[in-house]
Image 1 (spheres, rainbow over the protein chains, first blue to last red):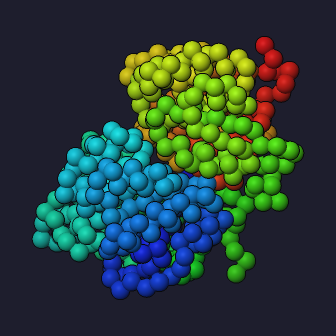
Image 2 (image 1 turned 180 degrees about the vertical axis):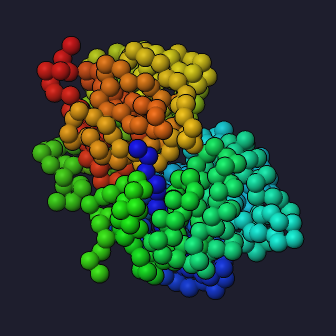
Length: 262
Length: 215
């Protein structure tokens, strides 16, 4: 039986892991390779590095981080952030990434999804969508540039378009949920998951291990992603999986994935 | 023991492993995993290097028909047909599917080393079949182990099947072995510690007993 995936996400800026709240106020929380190895040992099913560097030098440091990670880590590694062209994707894959997630660049030029899928395969291409609710329009809209800019593109239109263009997976982040720890945005996730046939990764809002149980009970998404609750050690990947397993939700249990004694 | 020690236990010398380079897919991580396991690895389409290797890896991520065209253009099809009689050949992901006779993906003939056809996964669950799924096998060292899958097409189980996985009611071939020929549908190089142990088994003897393997 296919397992629900638990994915820690590390925001990486200039080669260091950082974390902000509502995409603002970044602070240093550790070395990416060290943290990746720790999450791997704890039973993470996959890892995401989101490159939030603002400069070319910062993005080059990311390549080095990927190389060092791929030498010690043998689970899927996805990279997002700073990707503008198919050549950028080629460089990340060559450094050792397994897939990339594209956000702003795909909204600016949707053909990038098709180019990337044709050249590297759909399995490499994850469409990352930052979704925000518009009270007036009563619908979700896409945001870009780390959540700073609202577009007039509706989330449900965009994910179906992205799937048609060749995206192999959707990483869906709720702008309302991100960093707030109020739980995953279930109405948004349900709507998107029903609109596409490719797997959906839920992101934004995880505040406790229980939120993951609710996520997989209430929706058919394939994976749950979180950053701060794992970095701050409010819970562990092992604890989340143990709770899911007790709730009858299939997860991959590894030797390292047992809950910490703490 | 750590993973590397477990996986390399009893291995006195690393194998010379040649990854068949036909320009398709990202093979860096297969290479890294094999090197991590103590082998000497070359990425090549040079017939001399392929002939000298102890074990051949046929990797592949991408489109079936495109992959066959590339293998043909590089003159690798007759060479692989010859070398598969002499040494272990391990196909991974699309590389496994290429070992079969035909695929719906691009309606193309494969290498035909293993009887059977590749068809699209039909299920109500999301496609591709993406994520960690448990092996179902009569072999105790494989049964129940979670491996990382990502594929849209599948081989139906047949007499050469060693392990399968269940995806929304579809039974997909996970590991196939016919003599020294091995196919692995999932990505052992991305399947954590269990995947590394399994990859080591694939390149150092395979999944059948010696008597079974002789034809």
